[in-house]
Each structure stands twice: as C-alpha cells, then as structure tokens.
Amino acid sequence: MSGSAALTHRQRDVLYAIVETYIATGEPVASRTISKRRKDSLSPASIRNVMADLSDEGYLAQPHTSAGRIPTEKAIRAYVQSLMSSLRPVVEAERLRADLGGADSLTACVERSSRVLTRLTHNVGIAAAIPTATQTLEQIELIKLADKRVLMVVVTRDRIVRDRVVTLPDDISQDDLNSIRNYLNANFSGWPLLQARQEIRRRLEQESAAYDAILAQLGVLYSKGLLDIAGTPEIHMEGASNLVGLDLHLTREKMRELFRTLEEKKRILMLLDRFLEQPRGEIAVQVGLGEAHPAMSTLSLIGLRVGLPGGLAAKIAVLGPIRMNYERVMCAVWQVGQTFEQIAGATSAG
Image 1 (spheres, helix red, strand yellow):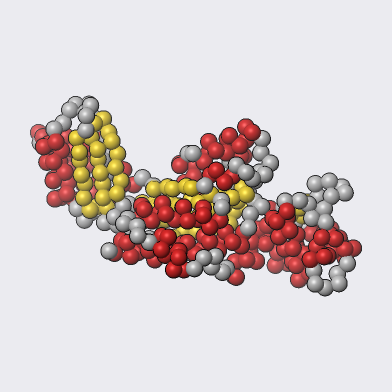
Image 2: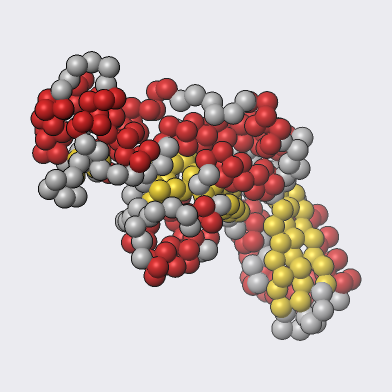
C-alpha cells in the first residue's frame, strides 16, 4: 500500500474519522467511538480489523497496549490531501476585502494578511514579501541624523518602502546627501535594482571616481548597503502567544526554544522557503516540522505562494499544532491568498 489512493473506501472512511476525532479530542481513538459515529452497521470488531490494517501500513499508532489508536503524520497527510478539492470560504469575501483593503502599500497589505490569518484560524499567521532583483527603483531619500548617522530610504515602483540607519566614518552634510540623492534619482530611477547596483559599482571602480566628490561619498553609502536594503524580505508574524495554551507535549525548555526560533525572522523565511515550494496558488501542507527544528516537531505549516506585481514573491502561511482544524485553516489560507493577490495588484497599479 503505497499511499492513501491504495486504501479501500472503508479504510479511508475509518481513517478520516479517526483523524477528525483525534483533532477534536486529542485522545487515542477507540473502535467503539468510530462505530458510534458511523451511520452503517459496521461493528467495533470490524473496525478494529480495519484499524489493525491501517496500523500495519503506518497510518495509526498505539501509545499503549490497551489504548485506542492515534493517527500518524502519514495519516494526517492523507486526510489533508482529501480536503484539497473541497475548500469553502470561511468568511464573506466582502468582509475579507474590507479587512485587507485600505492598505496604501504592499508592506501594509502583508502585515494585514498575517493579522487576518491569525484572527481566522487562532493560530500563528505569517506573511512575507520577498523582493527579487527585478524590482524597479522609484527613488532614494537620504536624511542626515545626529552622530554621523544617515537614514537611507529606498522606494521601488511597487510601493515597497524600506529604510536603514547607518553610521558613517565621517560626518556628511545634508547638502551633500541631497546631491547624492539627486544623482541617484536622476540616473537610476526606473532601473531594475540589480542593474542599478552593478552600474553604480562599475562607476565607483573607475579611476575618475576617486576625484569626484559625489561619487566618493556615494561609495561610502554604497558600502553600507544603500541599494541592498531594498532586497530585504518583509516578514510579519502574528499570534505566537496562541501556542502557549496548546498541549504541544513540549518541555519548558523546548517551549522556550520554540519561541526563540519564532523570534528569528531569518529562520521563519527559511521555513517558508523550505516547505512552500508548490506552484503559485497551490496550497502546501507540511505535517510536522521537526526537520526544520526539533522544537517544531509537533507543529504543522499550511501556506501558499501569492503572485504579486513588480518583481515580488510573497508567501502566506499558518503555523499551528499538528492537531489543528486543517479544513478551516486551509480554507482561510486559500481565501486570504486570493484576496491578497487581488488587492496587492490594485495597490501596485494605483
């Protein structure tokens, strides 16, 4: 038996009933419980035989000899696959557009998406906008701060705004910063970011750059990552506190490790990259995240890639316990993803 497709109709019915009961109760499921759920006359003894076959194939585990059975990750993956073709909206489309609409930038849309996912699923909502080299530069702003610091602001055509404060080795006047800003905006507005970086580097490497005051000062800002900040992913996560009240079977130290892991945006991005590789608009479900981090072994990730304009890749996801309401969470992720894509397209074009 290579997968759920090889299961008989009766085996699938029993397996899915066990998964749904376990999700609802968190307790091992007995054959008598499944017998009472069924409308036919299948006896507990017959169900026990089916459960024994499912156990042999790795779909069920028995924590104790006299206990009922619990579904394995393999069982939950089979159950999740059965839900893919019957996703139904969890909230009215108009309400969802109102929740996500009104954002004046894609950054704000990303942030709202994570918040809405948390509200709809009562789990951890994650949304990330991941820039690519094809993003187009709109303009740059440079603002002098105290103590030799400069605020560098990069705006791209898709209305993503990113900023960074850097400390320079020497003080620089606002007039000089204005000159550098004007030079960059006049020469590189409308350029793809990668090409702009390459051309600026080429000009800085020319011998004449050493004798040009603007280029010399530009070189200092360039070394501080002037255009690199536009390539920084925008990641928002809401609802981590929802994990506190769940029975994740983690020790206190493991729970601390889990929260430390969730605080690292780089690790969250790696999680999205690793487990959300499906084509755009196709829901991905990863049951058990122990491969990513031992503290995440009792968690699942449900997400999808969203198509955005202007050279952006975006992903939205829900992180929650293995024993979650997969149907509701999958529906919420799909619906938020569809709405996010529509609003982001309108925001970029506006």
